[in-house]
Image 1 (tube, one colour):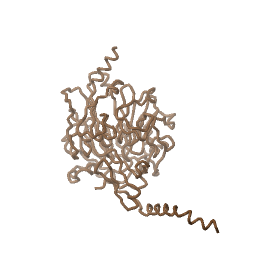
Image 2: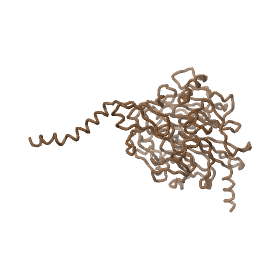
Image 3: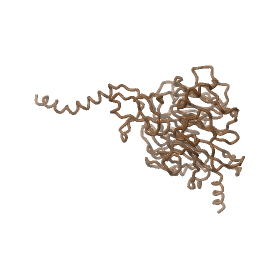
Image 4: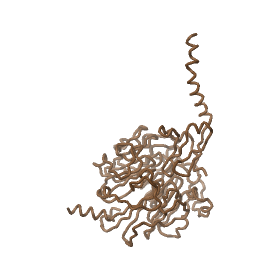
Length: 85
Length: 397
């Protein structure tokens, strides 16, 4: 059974773990990576115990992020013709 | 010479045990391991600063306040909650040196922040500030206790630290909240996502409050006439309360202890009641807990349940971890129940318990004068046995 439902905006981004985290009652943190979220995974697990939470989020928000970062890579190529014109 | 002898005697008067989750050093055992049975601690450094008058246990750190107003902390320190001036864990109790020149009278440990109150009414906070829970007007974390200037012209009596919020009780009665308010835990008329400066908790203006508590996203206060008020996240699936709600006005409470999904109340008749009791077993077998008796007829309020299995035994102390509970009976037994996966029940295993179970402390003593106290952090537990040989000690406790 999921311990709790937690909105993504209530989770904290942990640079070191490269994951969104939320306090677990055992003292550790529930964790979920951006990759997990892009894949539509909604379970954040605690590495220290058997508990897990259900993350409430919109998968599209994370897919869009992914698209954006892809577009960024393409941007210089796109801009070049404009500058020529 | 005589002083030293007295100190030595005093140090013999207390025994401290810890058990449960220990991978952040929060047990003070000097190891990074969970312990399933009470471990007798050897803390000579700590005891040389007087006996422990109270402990505060948080997410994964602990604060000891000594009888002479000194403060020691240990456990997780990665957001500065230990106040040692660094963002590092500490396996052993270390003094909070920046508070050495103050006499501290009250301490509280939240999920990842800490609060300290001096005998002159000053409030200091340190640790995680990302929700404004330090009350310093920003969202920064602090590794050394910082004076909360907002209360420069007030006398602070108590601080209570929750998961991401804090409550303050001023002398002269006013209650304030700061930090995350998303579940209504600050007690403001308008729901506030988070606030980094203290806000008056509404609805308690005309009530004489004597104590406050916070844990998880819950807040509670007890009035001089023994009424319990709760606000914040609803218990047992009840709706969140933005403003303090009076629980069953016929009750006379002397103490409250909050978990993340439950609370305990100690009544003037030395009886224990649970708030959201059904859910406390949420991590246990639900069917086992369905037989509890409900005390409240009003379903919009938190339900109060009798603790099954106590059979009318009088209780003198209560404590609540995130998902476990502990109490001390009038005849000096420690009982624990709730979630047990990390050994936080101290029963030698990781099994959940829906009925309070007796914890055995070793070495046992047959001294009726000994007084026991129990404290719970999120996933761990501490017990202190004090021998009341010195009459001064009795008065202090």
